[in-house]
Structures are given as structure tokens and as C-alpha cells.
Image (cartoon, rainbow, N blue to C red):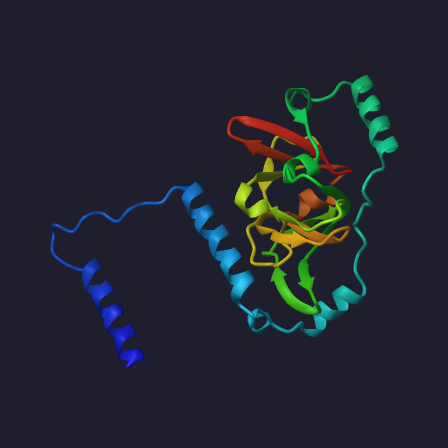
Length: 241
């Protein structure tokens, strides 16, 4: 009975999209509307799909070897002292116009939740992104992932809800001082920073990630990276290293 009902609904939908010449043009979505749909879908799937691991594919021998013997392209998060020195050196040598134009901000301000501190844990350049010993994502040919690691910490004595998903932040990656930026990917990973929406227990921390797919040649020339956040017409910069 249930199958017949579903079939009837499908046929009804098909008929509603068919017809004669008077059919109205289908509504076209903007990029912002598509992003909101993807965000909502990601939240629903990660929250309610208990069988999500079945959607992953096992690692093959080549991928396992690459994970066991990675080419270390990671850089640790810069200390406050080294960042201050780097800024001083940059001012002495003459900073770029974009750096002068953009106001600096922090990951904690980006999260915008009282009692929650967000800190960079560095970044890695990877051909594959693997989680829980299963294959999760694989970059396109000629591309690699820049994986930015962000730790969220509840500094209070009670539970705090962190809702990055609801804020829908616009986040892009800037490599070195290039004018070109790359938008953060929207994934279904449960630890995706952009879709993070959970309650943190008192004093607890959770590690999240931002994934950016860039040309391999760009990644090989990385000296520093920054996150460019945008809220309306206002853009700000977060220096990662």
C-alpha cells in the first residue's frame, strides 16, 4: 500500500511538470539559495542518518600506502610572537593593498558564540581526505585539498550550543597574497566547520575542518594562507600561518 502511494505521488509530480505550451518556466535558484539548500540537507543527513558510514568506499592499496607514508606538507599554527614579527616584517617591506584594505579578525569572532573559543590547528595539503579509516573524499585530477583545522573549545562550566550552520558564513582561502581566492567546500562530513551545529559540554573541545580544493601547482607554492570572511559587503581576514 505504501509503495502504491509513493508511486502515485511520483506520477502526479511527473504529470505536473508535463503539459502543453502554456507550462510556466521553472523557478531558477540563485547561488545563495542553492547553498542554503545544501547546508540544510547536510545538517539533516549528518544528524539523522545513522547508517552514513555505508556511503563511504573502502580505501584501495594505493590510498592506504599514501596515508601511511604521507608527504608532510603541513605547517603548524603560528605562535602569537611569530605572527607579530611577521606582521612587523610585512609592514617594513610594504604590505599588499588587499591586506591594508581588509580588517583582521579571529576565528573566535567568526564563530560568535559566548564562551566558545576557536583556534587554528594548522593546515595540511592532501590528495585525499580520510576520516575514521575510510575513504571520504578524493580531489579531482590536478587538484589537492588544503585542509584547515579548527578547534572549538567550550571555556565555560556549562553546555553551550555552537551553531556555525545557522550563521552561514562565507569563507574563502587566500594563498600567499594572491588576489584569487577559493571558496570553502560544502561537505557532508560530520566535522565540517561550515555545517557544525552541536552542543559542547563544559570544558570540552572538538576538532573541525574546512576543505578547499585548489590547483596542485598553487599548493606547492604555499608560503602562508589566510581565510577571507564576508558578511554582506564587509570582508575580513584571518591569518592562519
